[in-house]
Length: 516
Picture 1: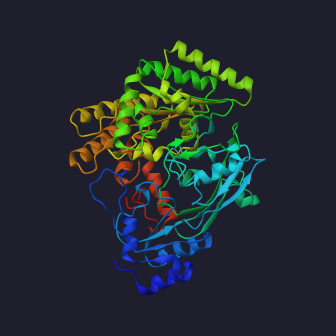
Picture 2 (picture 1 turned 60 degrees about the vertical axis):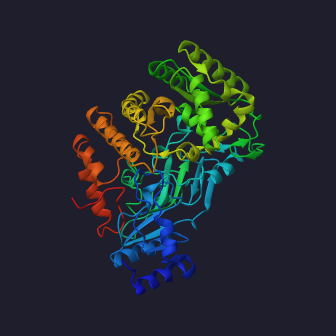
Picture 3 (picture 1 turned 90 degrees about the vertical axis):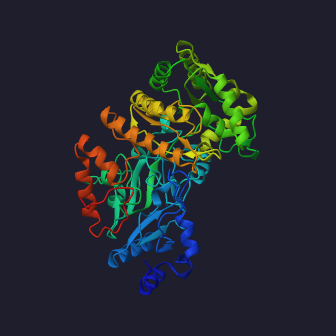
């Protein structure tokens, strides 16, 4: 549908003529379908117009116009993934790239306040200068540092730095009907230190197990907890990614990739590491992810994958230890060595090799390798089939999906990059997260179908095995699959959607609609 001229002019009055466009070439640039989605369609429906608001008041004005004109809107910041795509016509895009300020870094109370287009690389760099750090979403430091824009906000630092649901503090929200809500301490005291109260908290409405993914208004500012950083304020980095300076490891830091003879041995080692709280970062990467992290070509990728696969004895994880003092570092190192010895863990030598260790260390702390790990030229990432729960439960859940993946690898429908589950520890073992990385060939229909079948098999496994609700549960169809087995949460979610979005203005194809 073509946008009415008077509506276009009204939007233009809000953001200015230079910050709105309905040029087909511009609209098509937003309609390209991400390779992260296992579908053969190259484009999604066009937006009717793209707007670039500069602040909360402009966002509010656009939202109110959409309600008045029976249009829908969808906001995004860095847009890593398919969640900002519309499902049909009649949608206005809010591209929040002009809202890119770090509003506050409060060193005393250890929180940071950002707008949606601040990326984690920016925020972390500023924090490190102050002896602080942040949990960067695992999708990479190129993603939005707004904890509500980063899906579940699980990341490499989650073992010691938690994740979005826990780290989110006060926030500013433009509701789907155009009201500005200031939540937590921001409403009562004009301060950002707390996400709850006074009175009943809305944090459970804003974010539950999964973020609304653009389906419940626009988040314009948010605070998040930040953490102590025991490393240097700047790294003496030289070279170009992934070939950073290889021989620098800060005092008190150590990186290892440790493999085990079985999943049972790995789980026991992870349990002990969580119990002892020695890990700064712990990610259950497999050899394919380690190889992709450093490779720059297909040939390099295959060579590293072959080399690492031949050197490991079984499933493994990457761990980084960071000591707060020489004594603390010595203690943590000795505990890790004892756990490795008792659980028969073996270190992958190329990772601890001085020629590689510094580069690996920096890439995983800065989270610069995610795009390499998930979008390799030989295939692209097809789906996350895990969720947040205890580590052992997630490990067993993902292991079931691995069996389905193995069948398709044998049929040459998927890239043969191994079937080890990727499971990470959160909060030193209080939670866990699992993913099965599915690298498919986007031009091969059999490969796309295989990805879909693994995705659905994972859903069936989660429901039938009572593994909980994973983080990939978005859309009416998938929510309805889980609802009957999870206290019919869909009934309450739809009531919330209807209450806060009476005109269905906030496009909710990746959330839930109020139609049922």
